[in-house]
Image 1 (tube, rainbow, N blue to C red):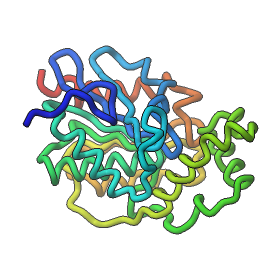
Image 2: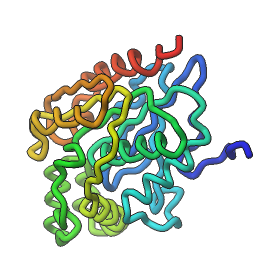
Image 3: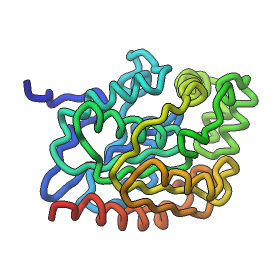
Length: 256
């Protein structure tokens, strides 16, 4: 049976053509399909970037909010797998970085698919993640302060009680996923893996970023950018210039 044309995760199937190659982006905790608007519009036409619409938010607000990251990764891979008919890349920031790795594993193990490259940003590798109730147990004031420090949430949302109550359930659910994630060793990927971090991210130093190297037998590269945890929002141009070079090397020109 051919794959259906309508996906719950994406507005259009991630098909690879001669002119455009899919870059599938997984949002950070609390993020939605517009999480990476600050830089996706700077990508060339050769890259078809889409950010996944996860359950429990936006047009999927009625879908059950996920709590198990591995179950969610399996669901994502099972929906995307039948549509991936050529080279594609994965990108994820923070929680999205770990999810992109988990999705890559399942696409490999369940469909025999290998990404042209996986780009992880703003996260330690799985074996170095801090486990336990780090964020999900915080009260409202503490959580809002932590989100404000990280810089990924609109200050108006954090300051407005009504807006906060609208987004809090999704943020909390994602943080439960983040806190409950535990590393399970698996054979490394074989594709290129690029790891990005930032100088002011107190949770990610260069040594931890370089530790992603163990997660692939393919080429590996790491780079630190100026800025805080959400560095690509303040300086999108520098980040995108580097990303474009990687994508042209590993994705766009891979079968030309």
